[in-house]
Image (cartoon, rainbow, N blue to C red; front, top):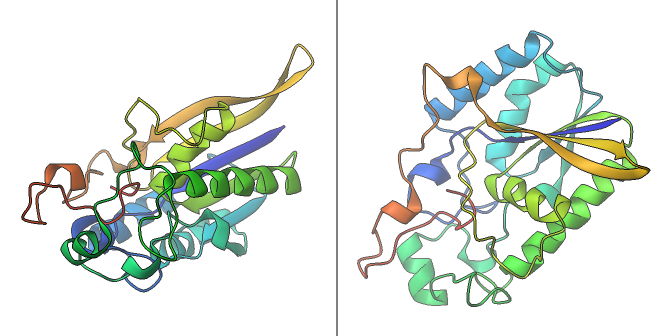
Length: 237
């Protein structure tokens, strides 16, 4: 039986400041994000899951989360570029206002093939990358319990991959994947078919007394001055 636990990183500066955060713009976790990751570590240390593999995105906010959580699982961290958030190319490190005025406001619904900026990814190429990564990881570690510290966009895209939804189309349902939330997929055999079953989504039981809502939600905030909401990365609220 293969179990895949996808865990979003703790609250990052990229979630609360109007900056486009790839490898250059990512300043890691806020104090709140560190506290969230520590609560997750303490929860996992109680033996809730027995992981065989610990994988982390290489972006600083995910790396820092994984490093905090690692002692609870007693595993080395395998860093994997392919479970990064949507790659922002030349917009990395820019303010939202500067990036969107230079490269245009991202429009994944009407322009799913347009990269967020030169050298970056489009919605379609991002979801395809995530699909390849999840297929590779679950194939290489079949029969094991896998923990992946990653990003909201990666977790959201896991639904597209496992439910065989079209990657060119933004889902009509809205996701709001919380910081340090746990999403649990399990591979089962039903009627001779190997299927992925969703056992849990957005599990933040460890955060009930400190909260999990970012200080800034991009769709609720106008920092560009032109009526458009500002976003660190549109897939990463």
